[in-house]
Amino acid sequence: MPPISFPLRTTSALLVAAGLSACSSMPGQTMGAGSTLNGQPPLVIAHRGASGYLPEETREAYIRAIELGADVIEMDIIVTKDRQLIARHDPNLAISTDVAKHPEFAARKKTIQVDGETQTGWFSDDFTLAEIKTLGAISTDAERPQQFNGQFKVITFQEVIDLAKAQSQATGRTIAIYPETKNPSYFASLGLPMEDIFVDTIVKAGWNSKSAPIFVQSFEPGSLKYMKSKGLQTKLVQLIDGDSVDLATGKVTFKLPSDRPYDWTLMGDKRNFDAMVTPEGLAEIKTYADGVGPWKRYIISIKGTIGADGKPVDVNGDGKINDADATSMAPTSLVADAHKAGLFVHPFTFRNESRRLAIDYAKDGANEYTAIYKTGVDGVFTDFTDTALAARKALLK
Image 1 (cartoon, helix red, strand yellow):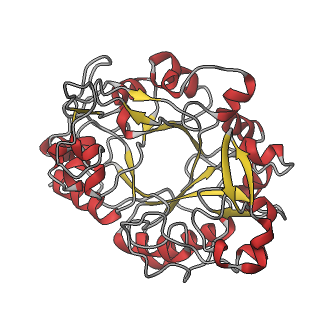
Image 2: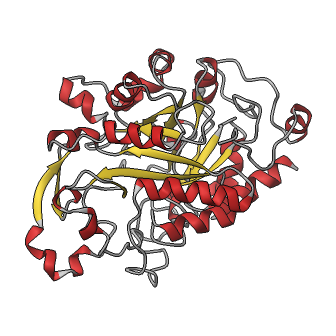
């Protein structure tokens, strides 16, 4: 495959004209407008495909994201009983498929722990690929279109690769992919480790190089380090999670399963994910990875109004406390710090629903993209490719 060629390439002069400084900010400063690590416009990464419009991680969702103009399509990789790699966000198939409507599988419902979290449902390691192919994908957000539920099938990792290659040829632009080793410690504990199969699939695709159109991500450092030790030479990305935000302070909070990498838990490492966003943590990541994928609140957090009772105020009066009751804060130095360490930054996940947008974004997702682009991020994970692209285009004019 040729090197990745993305739309909307620009010169340093155009970056300056767009309000994006050609020079990175000094670490320790909050960034008003910064440049990307490589001077190119930020990538638009279709998170699980066009998941804002179609059931996620299906061929149809990926094709739609490409039609909308995505630079990269993203997927989570889990393992079946017969050691096949498939694109699903959760080992628990009840979350994103119609498995509950299949009486032939009723007896396989069970309650287990996945990375320390108790879950009830049907799990991929109890199903063969052929069985999973009989299931239909469903939307995981009740606010999103439901009329396509059950119509589209689960796609394999190999099918994603084949699709990206075919679409690259058909469109004349390279479509990169962004697979994640999902819950690798969980699958390894079942005797279904995914990394060797994962690496072998990439090698056979001819994509085992830094210049190949692929980014490999994981929340577990051990998974990335193991694959690198096995000869994986692609761009590697350390994901950095968090549970929520303390609306009184804007600080990221932590709770199982989003407190720390689960391989850290297994090793007795008590640090939380925020240890990764310090200069020391970023330097450690640089020893095995090329970039970081932090939750967006590590870059631009939000802060709510706290009432006399010490609790957040329901500002919009909808009976719920969420992002729509909070205001965005000034950016942190994370992007500048990561760039100083030589790491690119791809924050997740940007969405259009008003409940997920701070008050100052005025219920318009484009305003959030504009704010995050101005920090100098190198790409964004989005459920709404078209909104992310429109905001990028407007900023680069």
